[in-house]
Image (cartoon, helix red, strand yellow):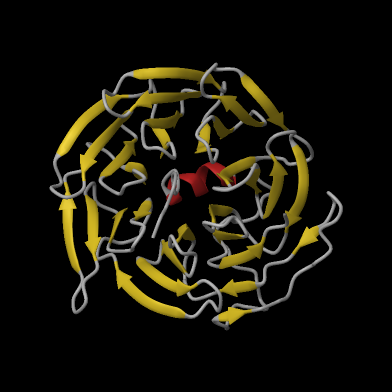
Length: 348
């Protein structure tokens, strides 16, 4: 499995922050009565994607988690999907049918941040304790080991593209880099003047991007831990995501539009803003200029090269906490406080 980019700013913390910004609805309430008692639903989709105003429904709704879904990621072949939830489980699904294939208990309360290897041989996650857990899948039995973690809660996890290095960010303003095979801490970076909310590796693994409550997005050299760039968002940064070539960095923040930064020059290339009240989670396609960003219950699909909206994905009943593109960019998976995972066909 391959998870690129951050999963969440700590699900419980993000829910509390977002509840003050939204429409008054409880972000953890599940009001999707059509699917409350079912496992998988296929509501169909709107195939008319010819105009920017098109609305698209999910082709598959998975409703097996009992609490908010905090992370989703596809396998490198796109056949499988893994999810994490505040119900304390990590689950593997068939990405086409939505059938449940495997389930693990975290043994540490809810599952917050999560990152999975491309081949699903291991998965890193955090729960209620300060430790970082490594779940190793085996042919007969699954094994668990732990890393010491940070001095306060971990907000985000990311694996390097070669799955050899794990990055973690924290409320203590730091980022740590870990060697996955041994659990050795490689270095600690004093990253921000406030808590570090999100973290992601560039596609080539040479850079690390972080966002903080201090309103800054920073880019670091992985090999040395040296700061390369600082982008000023001006308000708490929710998420960061690299484009397919690593030359563009997308960021969402509390008071700003979606920003697309040029990593080499430090210039803001595009600012995306329209009727969306608040963009929180962002993901960029691994094969195109397509960008996805959540707006409370809906997800907007944008052309990142010109900032134009392509379509809107509708169906969630509460805040969207996680987004992930399939490796071919044709499918988007979303996880929400309505306890569901939804799968969407992304228009070309």
